[in-house]
Amino acid sequence: MQKKIIALAVAGLASTAAFAQSNVTVYGVVDYGYAYRTDAITPALGVSKPSSSSQINGGQQSGNRLGFKGVEDLGNGLKAVFQLEAGFLLDTGRDHAAGSMFSRQAYAGLTGGFGTLIGGRLYTPHYSFVSSVDPFGNGTVGQYSNTYGGGLFDPVRVNNAVAYVSPSFGGLTITGAYSNSADTANAGTTNLAGTTIPSGQDSLTSNAQNNSVYAILARYNGAGIDLGLNYHYIAAGSNGVPTIGGLDTVKSVQNITLGGSYDAKVVKIAGWYSNSIQDNATGFSDVKIDNWMIGATVPVGKFAIKASYNLSDGNSAAGGNAQQYAIGTDYSLSKRTNLYTAYAMIDNDSATNNRVTTRRATVVGDGSNGGGTFQTGFNVGLRHQF
Image (cartoon, rainbow, N blue to C red; front, top):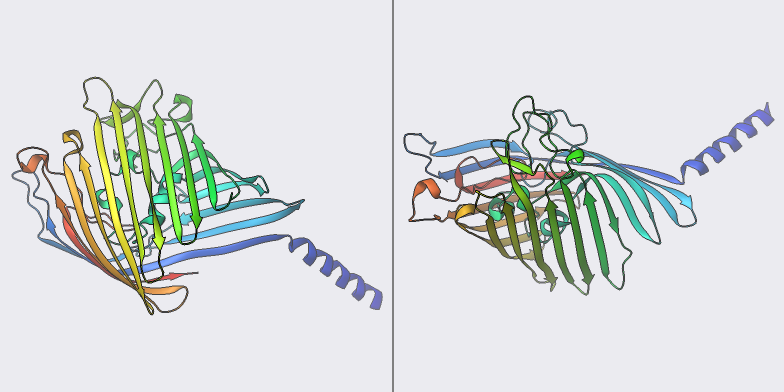
């Protein structure tokens, strides 16, 4: 009997040692609060508009999510890694993208002395960079993406992708990514260009149509400096990228962004410049937008006071210009829980002669909620990260 007990104990120890080489973490975000929006853009003549919007929302500062990430030590410095992340609506408990289980991220790969190589559904280097530089982290009504241009100009994630992240060379890392499926989406959902896919067209573009994405980011971190230069290019295949009524209007899109931040402890200053060009087919005007952002974060005890100014300078094909002023505050209740508040105001200029019908239609959305037609917004809420 004693021998059996010892044998079971040894087996248990052996099993524990084996599993010690693998580590899986469950993590997530739950975010809930209140939003008030007003100052609607006047729509076309004869169409009524609400004067304001008062809502209780989830996912204002950060999208609500549940994720799993893991690493297994394969020996000789080589490790297997994976990450699966699902988004959900805290208001209802439903997934935030119907029909998608892990719509936020889903990838697997290897990491070691050579760097990290992963594949799946990934954040683009562009988005990973600009959202981390934004004082508001691309959340609340103060997020940069309200005026940036959206869609193809601000690509957040890409499917069927592979990415490589180099080791750090004195603080400098290089990230490269590729996808041969720039804009896949199911019927009834919205594609990268902001167009709802018609019924019966389950995939307007697919990896068989060779709509490719090429991206590279060089980023330096050290001595309080975070500096990056990013290039993102979408090369439409022979069928183009459908954006207007299902027509293949887009030939290519390129985005170049230079920016970063400096943390002086008493204040963290951030900013960037971004140039985006959408080369359209003959008969459609090209879209050009220059984006500028300058912002600051000032820590005061448990408070973090944030402010930013965004200018989106677009040609007439982009609908004109837009600028956003934002201010907000975070209050840390603990390392993982904080209260937040933010206020933002957008000024949408006209492309020609101040006519309402050509006014830039940028609105104050937040992490998970669209801004309707409103140009002024306020958020307050609670975010817990686990």
